Image (tube, rainbow, N blue to C red; front, side, top):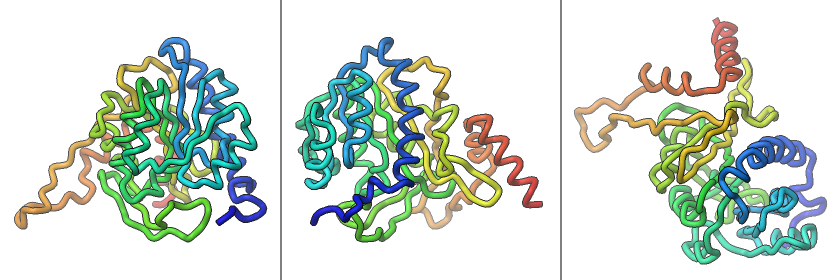
Length: 268
């Protein structure tokens, strides 16, 4: 089925979101491209090729990948110097694309039935660095919620998906084999990445790597371990205990800490 006109990814809210995400990604990649010797890249879930084009402009030898043929065809028209392929990140066949110094996966993981499997495939594609961006479910526990999605061109292929908490996304990156996971000190300058008194933060951007990264833009994100035994009827299910919540708060960027404190004070 062809994309509706005007194309959904050309709408203004996507343009603003892409600009904010691209600005942060470009600053980090300009800093790390030389030190990490980043040359090749794959843009997984490329949509109409916005970030594929950005990576190409930054000097990467890039391939764009998307699960929808109509997206791939349009992306190729808009970025004639970038090769595009149709592939589903949940299909093991995506790994046949090879390995790349950089893997970029923006706006995709929360649309999937099997996000951990997809992240394992992203790990297999990645030689050095993964940049991942996703909508996140509310909460501090490493959990996911299964939701029905609208039947729309900007949703998943199967229209049912697991939305992870940020803590869960971090844990999945570690379990997939990445040895280092990082939050961004300053998230993209878009309201979706900002918590206010009235609204919670709904997106996050993370970096994962096979080696330590030295950058003032990144702060290490620990793998939170929860002492939970669902199979044991006598065990208590954690209800947001203070320890993990304080640790999660301590790892947040200063600007977000200030906003959260103001939100708590304002609610009293």
